[in-house]
Amino acid sequence: MMPGMPAEPIRDLRLSAQNVVPACGSCQGGGDMIFQDKEALMRQIMEAGFAMDDVVLFLDTHPENQDALRYYQAVRDMRNQAIAAYESQFGPLRYADVTSSSWNWVTEKWPWEGGC
Amino acid sequence: MWVYEKRLQFPVNIKEPNAKMAQFIMSQYGGPDGEMGASMRYLSQRYSMPYGEQKAVLTDIGTEELAHLEIVAAIVHQLTRNLTAEELEAQGFGRTISTIPRGSGPRQPAACRLMPANSSRKVIRSPICLRTLQQNRKRGAPTTTSFVS
Image (cartoon, rainbow over all chains, first blue to last red; front, top):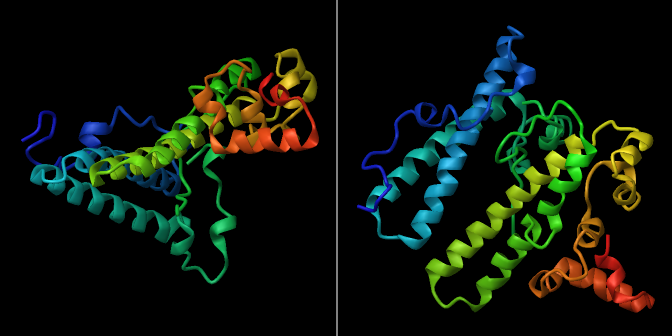
């Protein structure tokens, strides 16, 4: 057991990370459920993605650590589920995931433009 | 090879543009301690690493630095977004913006240009800046002009 590695994967990442990723101001208070869902899903992707980036680096130098491997599997599954849910409603995050009959890779907002 | 994900690793939502601040942030893009140099260094160092753990960690950190590069670029873009040429000039961004078409953010030569002539050798060796340097040599330009802002 390595220091700093939780014995069990954190079941709800939002409990641990809700103060880490700031909410998007432009989507708050509008009362629009669609945009709230979009923001919440992107937030889940960012949180699970951040946890995965972190545990991957840990595993690179501790490839035999079983606790870290279980944590990786848990956050990877969370990330995959959040990405699938986001993409099914709001368009592809990766060009390999385009399923629409039109090329919607080019129509959604780009990351540097802000918003959600 | 790499695959793009259409999201920032960390969100950037800047409401008030500030070109003066953008000039400080830009040093984290292509400057001597910037994300571009960090990424190129990690990815280049992989080839002399004998063990899988080292190759893996340099690959994954070098990749993550590219995500950081995109965050810095988004900050600079949003800090200078929708400013007029006069506003950019007044906020001291004139000399920088003159090398960046459309004023939307730094591109490769501008990032290299932001490095001072006395920046550390490891950065000058980064592939992108080396290419700019070589192109300038071919054109007969003094080698330092690419690195003096």
